[in-house]
Length: 183
Image 1 (cartoon, one colour):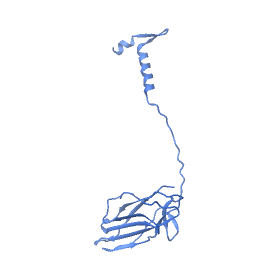
Image 2 (cartoon, rainbow, N blue to C red):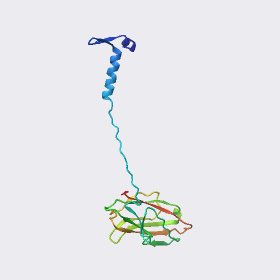
Image 3 (tube, rainbow, N blue to C red):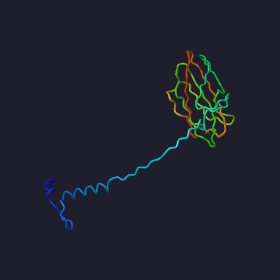
Image 4 (cartoon, rainbow, N blue to C red):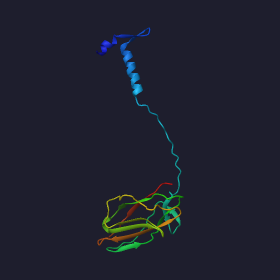
């Protein structure tokens, strides 16, 4: 049966005579509506409050102040390990609960200067983070979780040891990323 033969046919519904093609189209449309996917549109709002620092942040020992970023400078020497047991900034948790925290070594500008690097975050009761690289890794390194998480109201020291290669010259810049919940 082709469409042309459907246009001339009529069916009777009660007292009315309706073209068969119109009935078939109505049935198809009704079926599509019934079988079609129903959906709703939901919306949500975000209210963003600006705070100076997240709960877990850097702490300046000399200025007794919070920071989200800091720069630390150290001299290194060829074939010598430089150890700083307490760099100029530490890490603290000013919140009221333990906070999951992770750290990654993100980049190094002149990897040929560095033979090894060790980082430790600790206080007098716990070592939260400790990583030691005997060669320059591919960047960024995977995030490593602090274990245990930083406790509320506690301050943690950052320890660093760096060994220069025998051919070290010029300077190198390292970038570390600290990842913690926003509140």
